[in-house]
Each structure stands twice: as C-alpha cells, then as structure tokens.
Length: 176
Image (cartoon, rainbow, N blue to C red; front, top):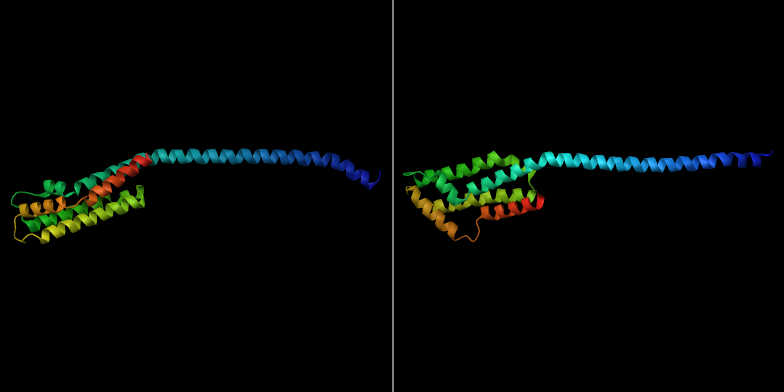
C-alpha cells in the first residue's frame, strides 16, 4: 500500500468523524444559546415582577405629591385662622420642599422626563407662591395671600402640577 491509499483510507474515517463532530457542535451550541436566552428572559421577567409593584408605588407617591402641592390643596392643608401671610407663605414653601425631599428617591423608578416635570412643577409652584406673596402686604392676614394665590392660579391655563400629573399618568398607562 502506498501513501496515497493510506491517506484515502484515513480520510474515509476522519471526514465522517469531523462532519459528525461539527454537526454535534452546532446543534449543542444552538441549544445552549437558546437555553441562555430563555434563562435571561425568565430572569428579566422575575425582576420585572419584583420591580413593577415598587414602580407603581413610586408613581402613586409622586401623584399624591403633585396633588398635595397644588395651591388649593396647600391652602386647605396649611392655612389656619389668624395665620399671617408671611407665616403662611413660609409654611407653604416648607411643605413643598419637605414633601419633595421625602419623595426624592422615587426618581429611581421613573423616567427622566417624568422626574424632570415633577422637579419643574415643584420649582414653578414655589415661584407662583413667591409671586403671590410679593403682591400682598407683609403684615396682611393669610386669607389675603390665599385670595391672591387663587386669583393667580385662575389666570394660569394649566398649573405645572397639572402638566406633570398628565404626563405621569400617561407614562403609567404606557408602562403597565
């Protein structure tokens, strides 16, 4: 037997072996990739199931915050009989800021756009209250500040809190 016949004889065994090995490799590789994808998807679903209630709770807290910092809600909650406009002004600003600080961690679960609108609503409400306070005499009764604040809000087409609320509600509907 010459070397040519020996090579041919070896190829008879090696080629089918290589073909079978390649076939098994590709089948096994596809199986492992699909298995990995399924496990990744399952893990994502489990994480989403755990995060969804927390996200919903964050949105709920932000909605409550936005409702609480609207002028009418602030007046109803903070104004007391005999309160001066200066004290009412300070208490309203303090309330808006402290509630914001209390809810600041909610931004983790919200989109950047939503959180930016919440921040903007806070700042705009503070500006609105400050503007109203400047229109009232320092020694005036808190009722005067309430009247001016409500008059100013009546002249605004949409309060910043309403704009933020609408956006947050829209985002909630799209997310869940």
